[in-house]
Length: 177
Image 1 (cartoon, rainbow, N blue to C red):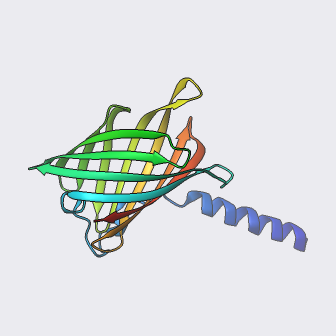
Image 2 (image 1 turned 30 degrees about the horizontal axis):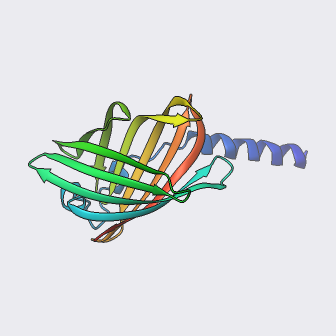
């Protein structure tokens, strides 16, 4: 009987945990310092990152040199990636401030339009990336969260998935130069 009660309690706890809602930018509205994307991504930045597979193993390390420029509500973020195996990549984001913490982003390897929302110190991007893998291109979804720590450092954690299955995570530390 005690064993059944313990199993029922564990099942109930798991069911309640499954009902927990995903975070939203509004959860961070009171957090400081407030993330001003136009100010943070203006000028030169560097980021150091890793990609971990779904088992948590580091599969790739990289450094990103970035330059941000703004003209009113339109911005460009030029990212130049160098991977630990020597390969390089470039992505140029075209960003639009839609007001009220809403953002849009476009890049050549982004399928459609990235949708962003910010509040307090946090920004959440959701987008589909056309990712070359072994001679094929996979369309993978990103749920990308950025958290401003101070005026120089921002942390970024993105979950990559396909068909709702988690493939891995990207973790980055940005430094404004």
